Structures are given as structure tokens and as C-alpha cells.
Length: 81
Image (cartoon, rainbow, N blue to C red; front, top):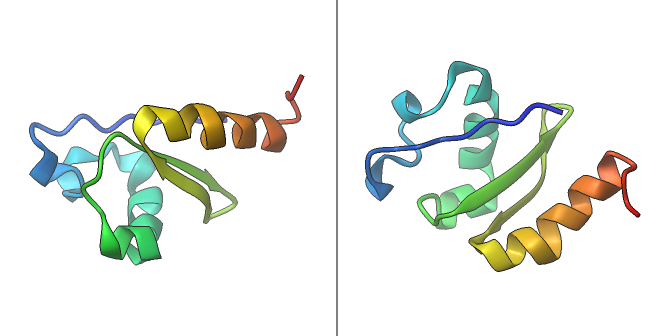
């Protein structure tokens, strides 16, 4: 599993291509084409689970990380306790 982090200078640059590491550009492209990408692209903190060229799940906020993203990561990596 690869892990990429985007640290823009400000919220307005969250989706700016220059803010993203090159290996994460396919994730950015797929996200911007998704419903969440079209309706709330700059919401932060955002967590995106990308697998096999597709977005599996995208959530915002630390609560959604804990309640939705972390369980999904455990599921797709077969590490759920």
C-alpha cells in the first residue's frame, strides 16, 4: 500500500496539480472527476482510498477517518482484527 500526502500552502491550493506529488496525480485526476471532487474539492482534511485505478472511498474529517476510512483500509488489506 502506498501512502501519499498533500500539504498545500493554503486550502485554495488543495487541488492544484503542483501541490500533489507526481505519483499521486492519477488519484487527483480520478478525484476531480468524482462527485465529491466536483461538489467539494477543497474540503479538508480529506482522505482518499485509491485502488486499481479507481477511488474506493473518499471521506473528510478525522471522525470519518476513524469511522469509515480506517475500517475500509483494514478490509481491503485483510488486516481487520
